[in-house]
Image (cartoon, rainbow, N blue to C red; front, side, top):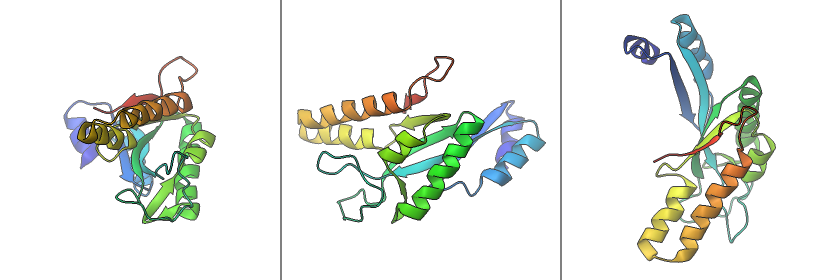
Length: 171
């Protein structure tokens, strides 16, 4: 129904970003191609939360308030290399990072970011969490964490070979 509706609206591309997996990617890709729509493959990833000033570890099973499943991060495959990296990240999250949900971490994102576009900022994301804490407490440390988080993502998902950005903040 999605690709049919996209076609009816005159759009030429659409993305699917399943939560924590790529299970719908194959069927979606075939359906979109069949009606002449460009399929954009992605995942709404779960990223292990940072703890005590250290980057989160997908293998850490220590309970923390609210974020055990991980922060949300949308990842879209921009290239074939990006698609392969999405598959690596998703598989690794299930094999090594499963704790409530299949989680990635900053080390795997840094290792397998080539060809991917990242979007951070929705209400379940690290940026939103830190900004919300800043608004609630007015403590500068939360603002600084949000800025640091955005800078990490901007550096990790730096511009592609055409100089186009690969990191976006969702508003």
